Amino acid sequence: MTDTTSLDPGTTIGGHYVIDGLINRGGFGAVYRGIDSSEGDRLCAIKETYDVTPTARRRALMEAAVLFTVKSKHLPRVYDAFESDGRFYLVMQLIEGKTLQQLLKLHGRPCSEQEVVNWLIPIMHVLNELHSRNPAVIHRDIKPGNIILTPDQTAVLVDFGLTKLYDPNSDTQTMVRAVSGGYSPVEQYVGKTSPQSDIYAMAATMYFLLTLKLPPESVNRSYRDELIAPRLLNPMLSPNLERVLLKALSVDVDQRYRSMYEFAQALQNPSFTPYADPTIANGGSGASYAYTQRTISQPQGIDRQSVLGDWFKACWLLLLC
Image 1 (cartoon, rainbow, N blue to C red):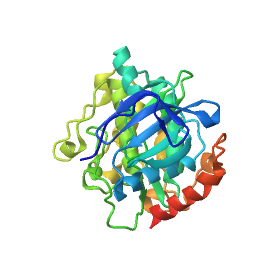
Image 2: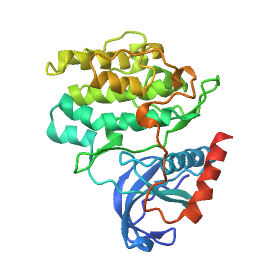
Image 3: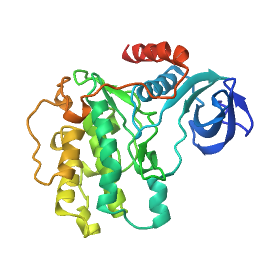
Image 4: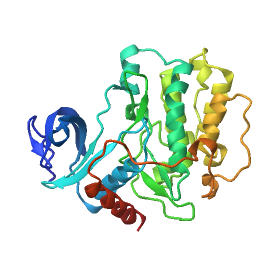
């Protein structure tokens, strides 16, 4: 049986990471507040995975590799990764703030349309960049509990533990059939996800933030669709936002927006009409957009390049096998 005992405050792991306290824990692992004594007592988040089977290790390496290759204030930086005493550890930037799920519970009212758009559009830009890679990188677990709002109102998407690479030419897309009721699209229940799956989850997240009501589970909607139009739950919402959300929440993947770019454009521009340019959803690996045409540099402040550089290259090679 896997040992799921939490680490005590003051415990040192990896030679120089000191456990300062438990942030959260679940059946598969825990997240701790930590101190890196080798970096001037820098605060960090230490994600612990109890399971070190090949499948679990692959997921952990994927999360580390994805975060290491993107520099954005809307994703946590990754500092280190290692195994110790039969557990896998990922050391990341500590994001101070509350999740959107916690904020909703605290305030007890729907968020405003402008708040939600301001928070989530930047994350949509980052996701579009990940989706535009070849192969595309899919998050697969977008929900209010995985988005942290910092004190300066910056939204940060966390928990890439269910991330996968998407091959539009493969008939076998199953890796982990993990779902979050209300947020996961119907295709995720059978393990055949694509970039459109993240579009559905992002729309479901917006729907919940704006109405305080979770969409019905998509697998149930595929038989009898009882999704309530968001303006019936919150009359303050604009007709355009309702139209956009209902399209992004289509049960049929082909009826959703073809890219996160189109989704974001439709939210920001009521006159926007999806166009027929090639997209990664249709297998167009060369798809790119104005705001994604930039070089992705490595996160600043990571000094262990001798340890991490070749290690993460090896991760990508492993994940692409």
